[in-house]
Structures are given as C-alpha cells and as structure tokens.
Length: 260
Image (tube, rainbow, N blue to C red; front, top):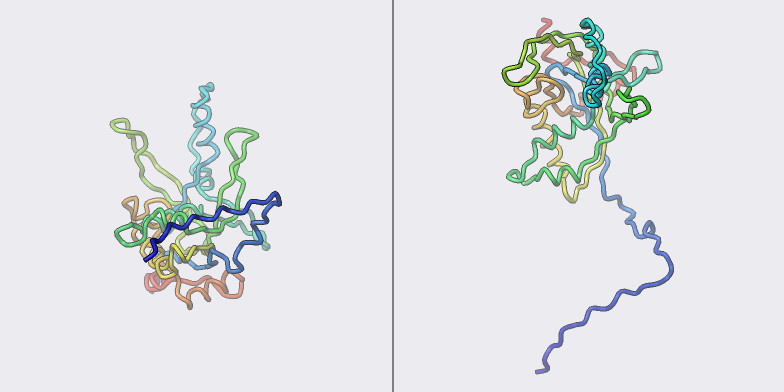
C-alpha cells in the first residue's frame, strides 16, 4: 500500500492589481435590523451633567481661580438634568436619553453562565441614536451625546434628599432633577444573529427592564425607578400612533388603576 504524503498547501496568488473587497461582500447583510418599544413601568429620572458642573470640574483640574459660590437655583438644576434634543414640528421641546444607558442595561443581563456572554453582546449589538451636540466646559471643544427620544408626558421637577462627598465628609443636600412619569423609548438597531439570536436578544431586553433599569435610582443602583418592559404588538401600535400624532398618550395600566 502506497504511503500517503502530506499535501503541500498551495501558495496564494498575488497580483499587482488592487482587490475590490466591496465586491466580495455577501448580498445578505451580516447584521439584522430590528426595532422595539421600551415602555416605562416606573418613572424615569434623568440626570445630565450641567454646564455649570462641568465648568467647575474643568476649573478645578486646570487649577483656575475658584469663583465665589453662586446661590442655589433649583429650577436651573432641574432644566440642566434634562437631555434636550431640539424641538418638534409644533415647536415643543424634545427630550432624550443616552442610548449607551440602554445598551449597558441589556448587557448587564448577559452572562456566560446563561449561555450569552457579555463580550458577545457587546460586539453583536448596535443601537442607533441621534448625535446631539451639547455645550462643553472648554470653549472650542465638542461633546456629541448619542440620544434616543423620550416619548410621553412632560418632565416634572422632583426633589430628593441625597448625600454628597466621600467617607466621613458626606453631607446631606437636596437634588432637583427631571422625572418622566409616563414614558417610552423607540429603539432601533442591528444585531448579529450568528452570535446573538433574536430569542436571546428578546430575553436580555425583557430581563434587563427589571434587573437593571434606566436612569437614576434604578434597580441596579438600589432603587426602583426606570423599570421598563418590552412592548407587545398591541402596545407597539399604540405608541407608534402616538408618536405620529394620530392618537392620545397611551396610559399604562398601573396608572389607570391608581386614578380609579
């Protein structure tokens, strides 16, 4: 019996002509588009960095002369806590929320012990957002925030007792921030089904609504605010019609019961 010889790998054919890699792409895209609605179960508290806070931080880092402390302005604190996204066609102010917070919430529900590694979700999930330019502390710098629009009622000012400082230097203070009681986010993006199946993504989104939440005092931070759920088809249709201006604000069941 003749002895088998080890095959010698063929050498790649190299040409001086540039290769058009775009022509080698598959007609079928790697990432699958999707869109969902996340509907709030508990109020959402936003806390954007104010220009005043960023300016104080910059002055401290560059060792600039510290100006005298200005009187507290709760209304300014409230307005500064909101992520403004411009105005709609009717001239009403639009508010948003950082899409990075949504992705972090989804990723927090992933774990290798569940068969869904967090690193896999990080690379296989992309969420769309509007890049909104905010006012920086340093003149001439830019700061673009990836935001998704908050649909729902107008924000209200809330007052909270908080502790600021570290260790024994903590002192009690009052915080004035924006709260959206009835809210929803329309999220769109893409995912790689070869790494993250549609069923797995649905599971992560559903679990993260309670296990993590969004905004300040969420479950992940020992609170109960910012809880949400993945809207079903009926809820999607209701919020889509509201977003298009074709129906009134959808009132979640828990708020209907509270009003009765």
